[in-house]
Image (tube, rainbow, N blue to C red; front, side, top):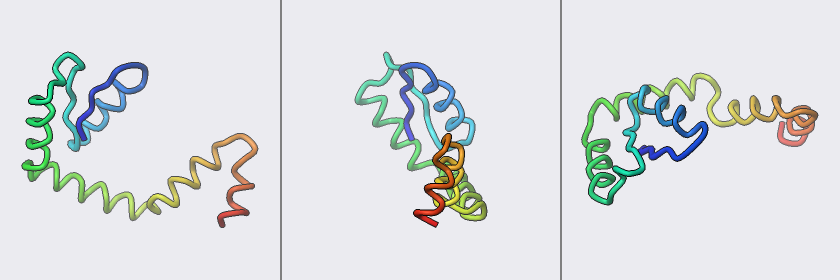
Length: 89
């Protein structure tokens, strides 16, 4: 992922992805076509990025994958968790 944060929580999200080893972060003023291309090529050519992505994929699967993530989000919604579990579950 190439993160070009603009405001609010985007900066924290970009830093988290960069810290996980799966993203490059560019400042808005640096996000030229050439810089974006260079960042994209650097990501796809970096074996460490590929290794980290596989690690994160396996971890996500062990923890229940996207279904579990959706269940957690829905359960956190006020008054909505039980409804979604009954409809989807």
